[in-house]
Image (cartoon, rainbow, N blue to C red; front, side, top):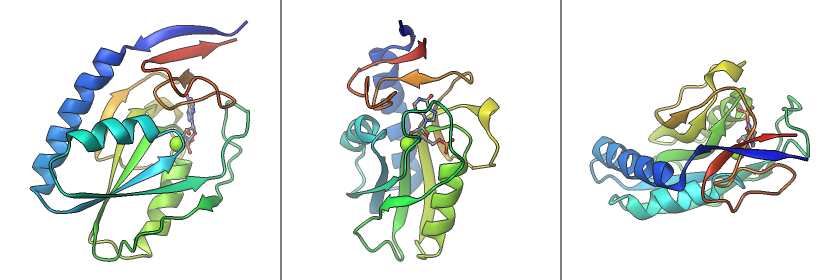
Length: 172
Ligand code: IMP
Ligand code: MG
């Protein structure tokens, strides 16, 4: 039987969203932004964060091939859905649920840089520094967590648990 052990409460997450939005607003000083959510895991975070930002925002999404039902990366990253907006000369903020090995983010940064945004930055709700195999610089981090598999607040295991308002460690 899989068990969920609470790691971050809904209140902790919401409070951190307040702080991150304030940091991001202070950084961009009212410049228009493109928020680029990485599907599907970032949907809750993008929603909470975007509602708190005062800067004018456009919203778009990208999606990569997923882990399938496995709990570790296949090491292959393929784009499944590209963004629709033209990001040339725009300030782009990638919105990630979690940075684990850093592989996905490294590929995404490489790809987007070829499209000449005015700036390219990353906000990640969660980071697992111990899991990193690819150095990926995160500009704004919600929480650093241990190298354990987590679900909730957008994060899934086999498409389950995304809708939870809190984050928990999944053990089977
Ligand atoms: P990375 O390429 O290894 O950094 O991880 C990319 C993606 O794997 C993340 O954006 C998540 O969608 C997924 N992932 C990594 N760790 C977890 C986890 O602990 N729970 C659920 N999904 C995860
Ligand atoms: Mg993701």
